[in-house]
Amino acid sequence: MALFGALFVALLAGAQAELSGCKIRVTSKALELVKQEGLRFLEQELETITIPDLRGREGHFYYNISEVKVTELQLTPSELHFQPEQELVLQISNASLGLRFRRQLLYWFFYDGGYINASAEGVSIRTALQLSRDATGRIKVSNVSCQASVSRMHAAFGGTFKKVYEFLSTFITSGMRFLLNQQICPVLYHAGMVLLNSLLDTVPVRSSVDELVGIDYSLLKDPVASDSNLDMEFRGAFFPLAEGNWSLLNRAVEPQLQEAERMVYVAFSEFFFDSAMESYFRAGALQLSLVGDKVPHDLDMLLRATYFGSIVLLSPAVIDSPLKLELRVLAPPRCTIKPSGTTVSVTASVTIALVPPDLPEVQLSSMIMDARLSAKMALRGKALRTQLDLRRFRIYSNQSALESLALIPLQAPLKTMLQIGVMPMLNERMWRGVQIPLPEGMNFVREVVTNHVGFLTIGADLHFAKGLREVIEKNRPANTRDPLASSAPPPSTAAA
Image: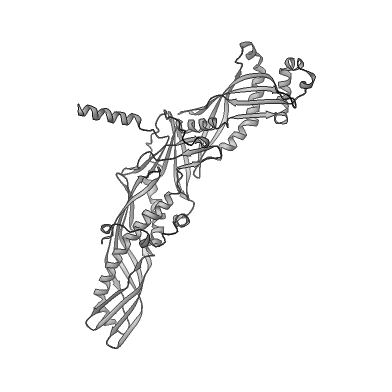
């Protein structure tokens, strides 16, 4: 009985789980590009390492090593890979660091000092970033594990006390190696938990698209890593800004990602586009009114000729009044995605009236318009753009079949008016696009769109439009300039 109850609860939880409207897959093909950019940033961060002074005494010799600075890094032998379930692992082996420090030696009354170069060789670093979803639905680095070691150090001592330094070099280099081991992991921990998270803060989660509508890119669960991919599921839903808590129930087909040829794949379900159109509908944006000079001249003449009989029966003060053409979408448009293409179905009312000055308008006709638009999607930079084209158009009267026959001569002119006057305005707005949840400084290039049943996928490669350091420095928290002061890893992660 208990087993049956547990199974029922699990099935109920699965039935109530929210489906994603947008999915993103980062494939292993992106890691080489990310690694190259990340290593450049990491080298600059490791150069900020500050090693404490090293003082000691051996017999009558007193030595002091100070002002230790990292001058050069070589992190070329490295590998970046995914590790199930939620980790991104960077493995650096047999790297080297160049150092410069000041030496001071006192033996009885004899003193020697100066600067010297040294090198740390056989540097091995393994750091793993655990990615998760935070309380706001944003992707975050939730933990950084680190292991670092320096296998050997070499310092070319010279000067008056060269032989003495060679005698002391074992103590000095061993001490410096120990201190260096202790400094690497705190820098990497700070780079992941603070600096990389400041970069992830630039990914939009819940933001406005324009003055009417916003979009919600909250993660629905933690990112999932496999050996070759990192998959993220986003809500991918639009909402009217005036109704911030409103949400549309997702009944669409859940998008699936199977491809792996490109660096990144983004999938959108029909729900993604339906929520956008319903949000604009609820915001009152899907209507258009043309009055007087706004109505194309040829269409104005045709409409007056069509309704000449009705117009002549009106009073002389109304006959020459400006003409009004009003389109109002009656229900939220719906998107249908098939392998053959993407279409949008729209039903609207078309009202034709005369608008005499200082008098109530006089309605001449009211009809229903059914239209089907084809939609082509494109990814430019990190904006999803849409191009619409009017394919099918039909008008009919909701009053009588006889009136529908009388409307046949208006079919072609109204369709032309939509193609010339309305579609360009609509496409101008659609071509501005909607931002994809991608960090600042990264763009998509060489995209390929593929339609499926109920969803579409866009495969693309990544391009760094800005350097990683430039973006992080721009968004770096002001009080975290010192990595050791702002964050410190657990003691075990910094162990040599």
